[in-house]
Length: 449
Ligand code: NDP
Image (cartoon, rainbow, N blue to C red; front, top):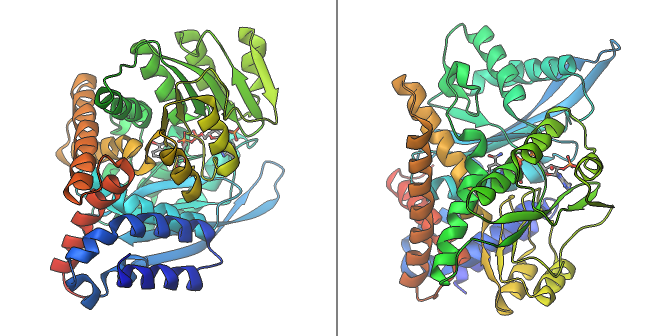
């Protein structure tokens, strides 16, 4: 491998050993882009890679709020403005008890290259808090969001940094966050945040965009294999916003999601989680702030398997992890290979260990990276920003057509980049290279800082 790339990876492994998720993503991206650095010796002189692994700005802040019993509660908030070379910082906010600096930094790093892949002018960022909305009342969530935004509002703006949702942050939280921003700033700058409700500038299709985009990308992969989506059985981890979008689009195209999971176990529904009634049940379950996935099995007469995961089930054609990071390690990868499934598309951010990816690829499974597969969400967020700045609203059909074009473009760019570097059909390397090239070029042209 390129000496300079090796040196920077070793530097990150050493300096950030206490941030394992961040180290993992740097190893994965920089290993892929080593052939690009071979062709661009000027990157070493400008120390481009070491600059890329340091966020332009990252801060943490105190978030104090009052619970329903009148107790004072304190959480930690984060915002990492990782790279603004190609546009305003852009990336979601995650509210979950396991949020820490390593998670936010890895997500911000990934987001930089993902946003570049979309072809939209957006830089990379991520933020969040160790506050978990599950089990909290509406009033508690509102007070937390107001306090969070009070700490953050000075550092964001439609041309500076544009947050959005992620795990634990849906349209309810976005509404409270934007309401507080508006109250503090006294202006209607709705381009400051995306994932908004339709009544104040949200985009049609945004709630579905990540899941729909993942299925559009899957269709391109299947086309390459002379295969089609009709009749396919899909296993999806999570039953959140992204998983719901996958289920809905898969059903429209004649496939079915037969497995879904949460942190407490999984569901196997042989009939498919496909009907409007089932899809609505999932939406209602999430909105209720409950994690009672078993209630789905009780309602629709199928099995719930507590405290288990479904990796390696023998009646799955396509695996789509869509819950969280580090879902699939070597143990799970071996089961997936043994099950005979052909396709593994990452949807959540970094669900797979680097070793597990290599193992699945070398055993003939087609693996696609989350950076490309889930990019439709932020892609439509960028379209939401455009609609806000131009004060217009595109129709559902228009946004959906743009999303589809974007996903086809991301797939094509990834295939082309891998081919150009003699790497064959490698969606992971190709996605990393295509995302990296534009950011690298912009940083080189903007001089040293
Ligand atoms: P949601 O909060 O809507 O749903 C998250 C789902 O993941 C829930 O079903 C939850 O189940 C499950 N989950 C979370 N943590 C764990 C865990 N530690 N173990 C097992 N299951 C877990 O989030 P989203 O659907 O929005 O996001 C899912 C993934 O997709 C994330 O990785 C996110 O970064 C990524 N993503 C999301 C985008 C978006 O547009 N929303 C865009 C791009 C990427 P339970 O509640 O039972 O724990």
